[in-house]
Image 1 (tube, rainbow, N blue to C red):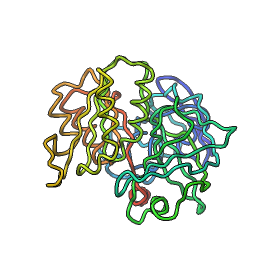
Image 2 (tube, one colour):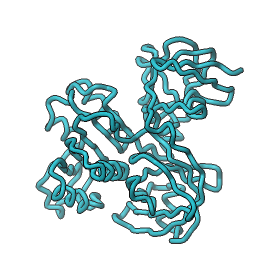
Image 3 (cartoon, helix red, strand yellow):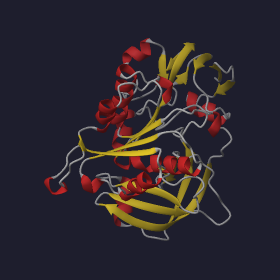
Image 4 (cartoon, helix red, strand yellow):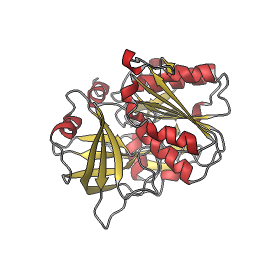
Length: 345
């Protein structure tokens, strides 16, 4: 049976049908809640249950801990109501009026930038345009009914081609095709834009961006958008990778560094190789931020990469550096194997 859900503090109400999660129903009725992976693995959609009963749904234990359940927290991308409910969630006005579309597209260009990173540029039909916010992502709709998500690396003002940074995942269903059989001019099908990872324009706080590997993709789009908007907010980019060859677009932030006085770039290598002759920062990328900032209470942080990096950054920044929880924005890259684990009971 359908249940009525009330969102606080806005007071907005929507109805959830039997086959829907709280997030699915909210998005269907035009209420933009924060979300990322949509499979219970990243924790972006976490909110508070003020009243009512629910089925938490299958999810990763790291995304929603037992103590958080005891505090009334739930993952709205997986939770299904068992009664009328009141939930506490912040609605995101910027994404509300953007239409999600399903469109054919053509592979315009494939450029291998590292052993395991392909930059793909995708063209939409001549009469179509994808309106999106810098940092959002698209899903490729595959023939077997599955989908694969990739962040948009270009800013909205430069949308003649959609740019994606695709990492080759071992045994990856789609990334394996990208590195073996996908060709320029091949036709694909995409759905988007999706996600709530984008710059909050209503703030004047300085911004720290943390990219892990190809987590650089959406952050590239966000920074290029900020540059185009001539923001005077401080912009600091930390890009963490294993070794020097994994900084697959290092020349671009170096260029920004020369051109933008309000921009700083700190690359961090976790496993530099002898041939790298690396004299820069080493270790985990979030630890570099901890070393540089004793107080994050006046900052916003935007993090994208592996869930373990995002989780550690969120936990340590809020617990030890005073970062406000609602000033930490993230997109966790959950690969297919992780998503399947998240769906296990």
